[in-house]
Image 1: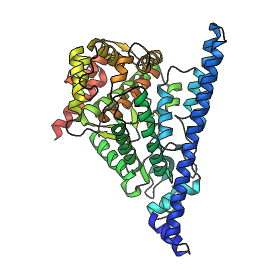
Image 2 (image 1 turned 30 degrees about the horizontal axis):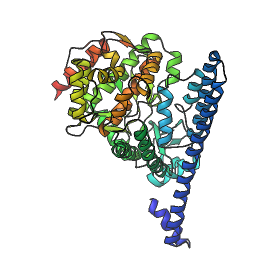
Image 3 (image 1 turned 135 degrees about the horizontal axis):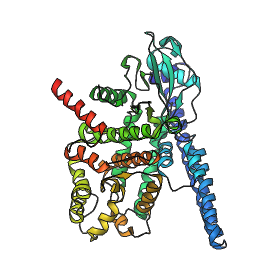
Image 4 (image 1 turned 45 degrees about the horizontal axis):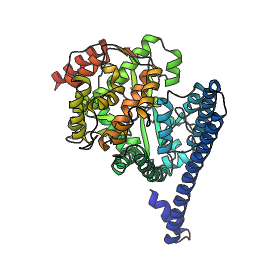
Length: 480
């Protein structure tokens, strides 16, 4: 379909060479503009940071926290304003920061929260053009009913509500034209950023492998036919599950840039936070946590984007999982290399075994000369909920843990400087932090250690939801 557009232009009197040149020029111009926006954003906030540091020198100590808060608020507003208009990787990065950056003032968090909601939508005519190209006709003809105003807009596409000719209410996700080029430009820039970060902090970081893993996953996310296949797989696997729900895919109304699924009513993240009881929040938190653990360890394929906008919540505490564009599948041997590191922290709690496992997995290079106790102290910080019998996640815990992990000049600086992040761990790390942040927002409490051992060591179910899932697994095994 895309080739037919170029052919039509050529037939209208513009030569193929000229058309190709115009297209290349437009893409280059788009990349340049995006790069300049990022550069200006960085320059503004660098200047703002320097000015704040200078002002702090002449400011009484009791007022320095106020200066720091003002800097954080203005920077967050600036980032939200810029990234909220930019589709692709940069907006995704902003979204990730927005729901894990618990150390920011409330006003700064509210500014970044805009990235968790809807992005700026594309014009109805552009969405209609994508549907017409990919499905063979304008949306008003393909569907019995079509809503021009999108229900939600995100970093790669936007969702419209429609009704099929068979009378089914559906959600139609339409990809933004040009977003694939924007993402390629972002990833080209990201490779430079990760190289700079490696030089400053993680000296052992394999920047090329790190970015290549992101590049592969993001390219898959741009292909809605790939996402459709993911959804078919996950929906089939979780069929009949007691508390995890997935929308039914509609393959006949889907394509590489259009994905149609059944419409799911339910509460958004913010609605759920505002309206639900503490007990319902606890149940939903455990559902999200268990869905991630089950997918990682049993299905061995998991959704790598735990963004709050990717869930719909229900009054019984169940959750519908909506987005399966960014899915990581363990390749042979990948999980087997990573798993012993978690064993050493949570099961054995053995610093020497941890260092050996990290060397084998590629987190540390041989000859690092680090003290195993220091490595264990650093690496175990995010796993504190699984080192005690009962734990309550909180925003304060998330804030303090992130601060310790990211403190390049703090007590863990020698460990941080020699750490690498294997490419296979990139997406899982995003899930670990993303789910922990959601647990903190929900003040989720439970026997997380015993629950983790259900998935990691086939331990008996520790909660009501665990028992329900065990019965579901048993019924699946019996029916085969």
